[in-house]
Length: 339
Image 1 (cartoon, rainbow, N blue to C red):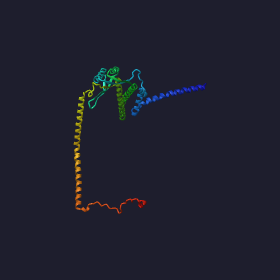
Image 2 (image 1 turned 45 degrees about the horizontal axis):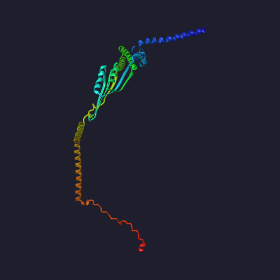
Image 3 (image 1 turned 180 degrees about the vertical axis):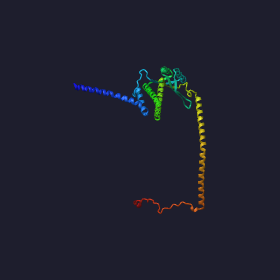
Image 4 (image 1 turned 90 degrees about the horizontal axis):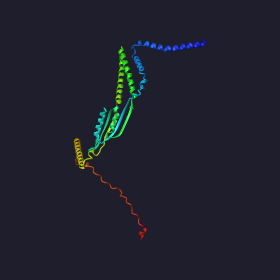
């Protein structure tokens, strides 16, 4: 019985010692805090970052914030490919429908294709439109009634996680900025002031980047992007050169041919004007070489006239010592000779 009582007393004393240890640690840390002052700017920064992290719910809370279930951050985009026989009227109608819903043109590219003979291949326009999300469906329905819709596409992108993650990081950086400004106001040493100013500059730069990203996401969320490609279809009424009479087309072809001949003659004249100095220089060089060759031949002829013995005459062809071989005639038959 005494042994059991002793064991229970030891257990109670052990538990009491364990519970007292953390309180002593906390009290010693609290006592050492005011005495530290600003002896180390790095230690103060670490303390500030730790406090901000605890107040913001830890770093893990930034990567996976609690997302509201009813406030999703969605972006919408759509595209239309439209063929039309009334290009001007449908182009004006698209802009009128866009103005009616309060949208605007973010980007526009237009082009027209035609051959050298004047043949019209139609016009084409690419429009990047920004439409308020609340009016997106109504605007798409209005586009469906313009021309011939070849293709229609709509997509949705969920930015909820990215949006609230950015918002949480902005909140944390705001608290960190306020804390650093308080440290900077209380700092007395030059090295501490420089360190706090540098860290505050980094925080402000990162905060500006995140706020710009959030503003861009807000704009994408509030306004949908609608890409429209409007292509003109060529009909007999809109054909240029093909709809003209034969005489007019022949006249146009002759005029183009004469224009080509005139351009060729102009280019030919320009070529000769550019090449004439070079040709004159080459002609002078060739004339000098020709004169030198003629002079050399004349001097050589004059020299051989004065010195005929120097002339090299061709050697006579020597006759062979033996006459050329000729095959002998076959001997005649003796019987025929006797007869």
